[in-house]
Image (cartoon, rainbow, N blue to C red; front, side, top):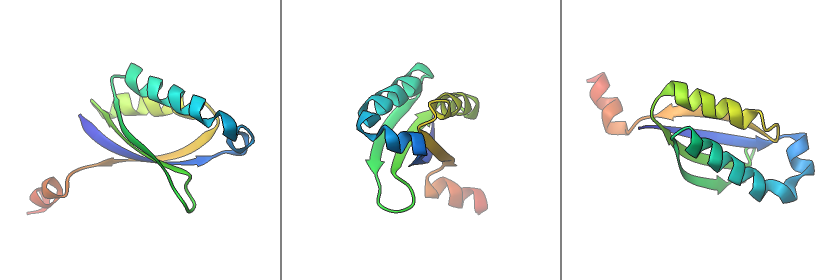
Length: 94
């Protein structure tokens, strides 16, 4: 499994429907699980981003598919990045 971090910002539609956010997070969790991913954690943030998530997917194609479905919900804008443990990163450089 590969690890991804996602930053989420509410869209104007998302802000209007903020009381429904628990339902949207359930939908996100179901999308991730349907794509055989794992939603490790979801955090609320202070700053330019509203939420932060750590997910795991078997490969990039699966991650893209899940993120496309999440983006289609139109309540959140997201930026997602693949991550790697720092030891693996250093090993690749040495």
